[in-house]
Length: 226
Image 1 (cartoon, rainbow, N blue to C red):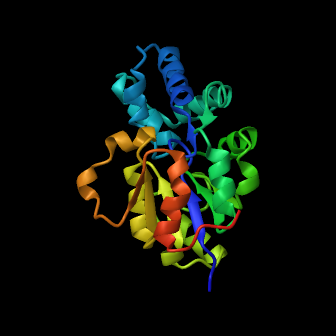
Image 2 (tube, rainbow, N blue to C red):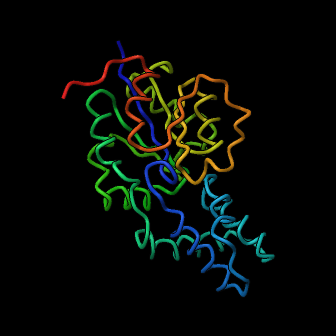
């Protein structure tokens, strides 16, 4: 019997990074002579990686986009990764619980270096076997290649794999790989999710504390012994 694998998205699932992402995008906009955007508007642009976030933000601010703007955004964001970003409440205990019965990985469209820096600083790294960022050798989510790589790496069948995320992108990634999905309704990305796409086989959680039991239901495995 193969391993059970639980793969977490980062922004809006493990961590609340909304304000630091918003402040960084607005700092770039102001630097380029534009007017800052509302925090909620920028939050809705998160999920597809830095390049698309910057393109969307600059377009909304009626400013030109170039690849150099992405580099500048990452410089700005790199200086404020942890100004306000925090793990969602209870997340360390959630990961500790799940890690007793499954391999945990992180799959994010954020570049790997800042993702690792945040995970280390917030004390989440000890529970995570592998982190894959959006600037690695695989296409970004919702392409399933990176999730399939993790499944192969740890010998987990699709039926023994759960992707925990908060956006349409995570939903599609799990679907494209044939894996289970657990959607975090507390995450800022879920606000844009079209609930009409739900089929009834997904797990939906309203707080991190609900994730371990939701994952076990999906995997049909008993709770680990304390």
